[in-house]
Length: 222
Image (cartoon, rainbow, N blue to C red; front, side, top):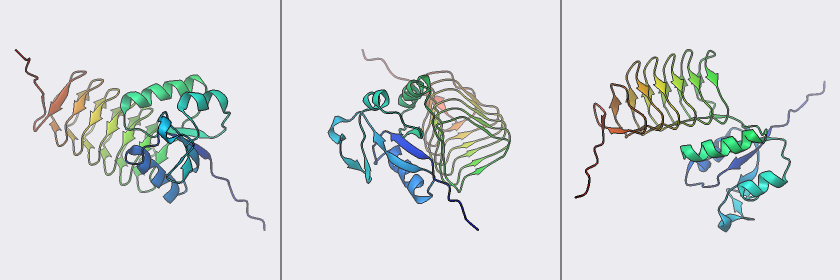
C-alpha cells in the first residue's frame, strides 16, 4: 500500500514585526504545521534581504506583488486594523487569496461563518450562528457567544467576552478583558478600553472605558 503525503499549502506573511502580531502568527504556523511559510514581505527597508525568524524578507509589499506570481495564500500579520483593511483591498483587487490562521485549541461551532484573513488564537470559543468578517483578529481565550456579527478588521484582545446577539462594526478595537452584554451594538471604529463592561450601544468613532463603560471626554485647551 502506497501512502500519499499531502503537501502543505504555502503562505507568505505580510508584516514582519516578531515583537507584534507576526511573531504570534509565525509560532502557530510552525508549531502546528498549518502552512509551509515561504517568507515575509514588509515595507521596512532596513530588513530587506535579511532573515526574520528564520524566514527571508522577500521585498516590499508593492514591489513583491507586482513582480511575483505566487500560487499560495497570503496572511496580513498586523494588529493595525486600518493597515489590514488597506492590504486586504490591494490583495483582493489583484485576485489573490488569503488564508485563515486558526489555533488547534480553538472551539468553533459548525454553524459559524468565517470570512478570510482571520486569526483565531489559542483557547478561543465561538458558539452558534456567529459570523466573523474578513481580517478579524480574535486573540487568546476570547469568547464569542451565539448570533454575534463581528465586522471586518476587528481586533479582539485576549480575554474578551461577548454575550448573545452582539453586533460589532468595522475596525473596532476591544482591549484586554472587555465584556459586552447581550444585544450590544458597537458602531464602526469604536475603541473599548481594557477591562471595560459595555452596557449600551456605542456610537462610531467613540472611545469608552470603565465599568460601566463611558465615553472619554477630552477637555479643550484654553
